[in-house]
Image 1 (cartoon, rainbow, N blue to C red):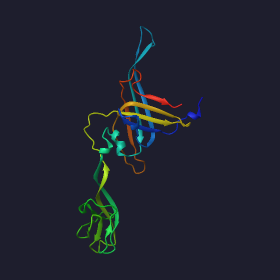
Image 2: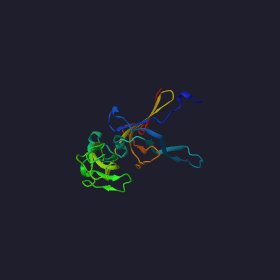
Image 3: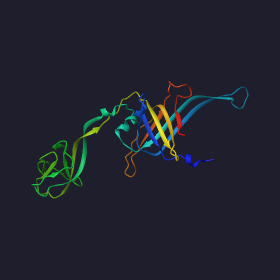
Image 4: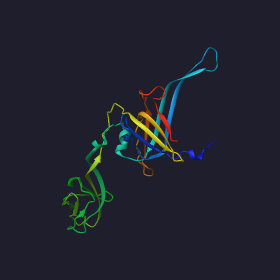
Length: 251
């Protein structure tokens, strides 16, 4: 008999924390899309006795558990575990250069100065082109820059036209460097799924690591989502039979 009040709704939420961190350190991975898939595999061997056709005994010789999801959100904090890093997010804040392209209308006369929407890193980082990028305008010849944010026409051919201003700014950012990390970090993983009666089911993998490749496809027509996959590791501090994962059903 199916109890409609117990039907599962939606995808739920995915949380992770570093191994050894307290429960309060769990943080949401991001907005999930498409589906979340948990797989538990067991490899067994069967023993036959004498001429018996059937096997009277079977033993498990290997077990694996994994969880896969698609994440729609894109934040450095969420990318840290996906990329196999354990860096503190507070250590990632830095000032970096960001390349921008702003549509800019030049001055009505050679005495007017138009203001860029952002302050350029330097005057030399500013590059002015026509809208189709076929014409490059020369600083000091076609226009001048009284400040790192101001554009002033010089020639008659440059004024009263719409141009593109390409330039670099310096902004507070978060940055991670990736590569040559031989040790895979271990995380505690929790997936929480809400049922139609408001109760929740939690799937907890106390020890897991990131599994597989990282692919981030940017698409014009779809949300940018990236796959994230975790594989369970045995928790040797637990008794036999309790070392891989556990499920909590709220009553």
